[in-house]
Length: 311
Length: 155
Image (cartoon, rainbow over all chains, first blue to last red; front, side):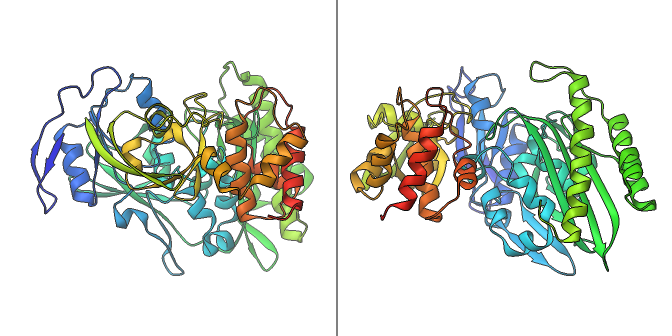
C-alpha cells in the first residue's frame, strides 16, 4: 500500500502486510513521472515499473523476483508520446506499444528496419501490449527490438535523481542487465532522423512463428543517396550476451561496392564477431552458421529493395 | 493488496474484489465462471487465454486484473452470444478446425480480431495473425481453411 501527496511527492510509503510473501505484491497506478520515481526511490529494487507486462507478469507469477510492489506507468501521458520531427528525429515514449508503433505513418515510411523487426516480435496479442521501452529494459540477449534500435543509434532518456541520456549500445550491459539504477525510469527513446532514405531488413530464425525466443537475428540497414548505398549498419542478436553492432562488417560495406566477394567477406566478419553459446534450442556451431545465412540474406534483401524488387 | 475494480465483461458490468497478483485470466475463470477462456502456458506462448481488452486482442494471462479496472472485455462467450462471428464458428465446425478444443476459444478470438480489421486476408496474413496460438491436434490446416472460408462468407 502506498500513499502519495497530490503534487507527486511521497508522503508515506509502506508495503501491505502480505507484499512479497509467496506470489503476492502490491499494485499501484500512477499518472505522473515524479510519482513513479518517488516510489522507485522509496524501496529501490523492491518496487518495479510495470508497462505492457508481457515479461514482468509471468516473471512475477514464478515468485522468484524480489518485487514487493509494481508501479503501473502506462497511464503517464508523456510516456505515451509518439512523435516525429524532421529536424530532430523520432521520439518514442517508453510505454508506446508495438502495434501503435507499427500504425504510425512516419515510422512506416522512414524506419523500415524498425517496422520489419517490430512485426516479427512474438505474436499480435503480445505486440498489442508489449512496449518499446519495456523491451529495452528487459534487455533480452535474444531481443528482436534492440538490434533494430542499435542500427538507428537510439538514445535512452532516463529520469531519476537526475536526467540522463544513455546511448542504447551502453544502456544494455548484458542479458537482462541495463545501466538503469533501481530508482530510475526509462521515459523514452530518441532516434535521430535517418541519414538518407533508409533501406533495411531484419532476418530472424526461430523455432516457430509466434515463438518469443529468437535463435539468431540479423538487422541490416543502409541509406540510399542517388541510387548509391552508404552508411551501412549491421547488428546481431542471440549470439552473445547482448545484441551488438558489427563495425568490422559495416566498415567493409562502407568502403567497397557490395560485390559477391565483399558480401562473402562481410559474412565472415559477422561470424567472427558472433560469440554464440550452446543451449537446448540450438548449438553454438549451428548459430554461427546461421549468422552467415541471415547476414547474407539481409544484405541481399537490402540490395534487392534498392533495385526496386520486393523479395 | 486488495483492489475493487469494475469490469465490463461481454456487455455486463461487474464490481469485483481482486488481489494485486490476480491475472485477468484468473478473474474471468474463477470469479466470473467464464471458463471458455483457457489457462494454458501462463507465459504468453500458447494463446489459449486470448481475449479482447478494450477491443484489442490480448493474452489474459499477461494482464493483471487490477490493470484492467474500468476496461471492456470480450471473451469467447460474448463472441458467441453476439452472433457477429457465428459464420466463423460454423466454419471451424465445417473444416474440423478443432479436435480436443482446448485452443479453440483462443483461435476464435484471434481470428475474429483479424477478420474485423481485414475482411479478406490472404493465407500468409492469416498465418501471421494466428502465429501466437498453438494447437497440438489439428496440424493447423483445418483452422486455416476455416478462417479462409469465414472470410469469404458474408458477415
